[in-house]
Image 1: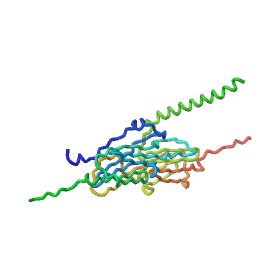
Image 2: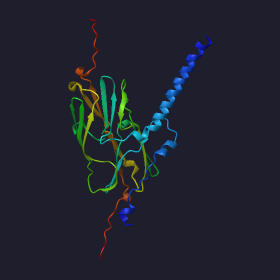
Image 3: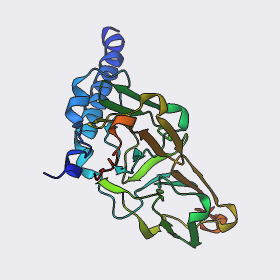
Image 4: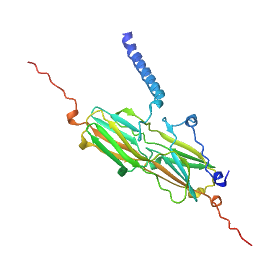
Length: 137
Length: 145
């Protein structure tokens, strides 16, 4: 294993069943949001699709090294109309990730716009790759 | 008299039971029936004279989407572009897809093209359509000879 591989984020998906095991206070479907994860020199960037979720309805928690994303969607009911063709089911989103990288917890940035969550997790100083100059002498 | 008093509650209970059964059946049958025919996934809501088409388009702005309506056909076209991340990046997870999309949806009635409204909020596109006056059913009065 190369050094780079060791530094990779380890991702643990939360299966739907596990969510359903917990007693939920809202009776609706819970989906796993589609997510892209990038690693830059200084941070881990996570982009998740949360269609139907407004910026005020997203909860992000980082406990120990488990990052949890919860998005509560607006179900978009249409008063006076009945559904007659359906390809998607509006619902909430839930996903957990296990982070292996040391994260600077004070500098986590999150923004939600157009149904997209953009989360920047800056690496802690000690986790950043440092170049050690070799002295000749 | 006895019967009259009893029957309505019995029927009411039967009705309730049936409703409950339907609800259970629907909820257990639903998951398999959700297969989008393409991107974006759409839902269609309708009544006699009005229709709302919603589509899941996270990340798209109004300027990224083109909506064309011809009589009873709705065509959605656009491009979903990838976010740019500065600097050298390593991709760890890639689940979201990007690129051009086109969807044509057959509507159940002719639409008044002057009354179409479309909004996009939190990644959900909502197109509100009104049935054309000329397409509405007409009541024909029968004349007596």
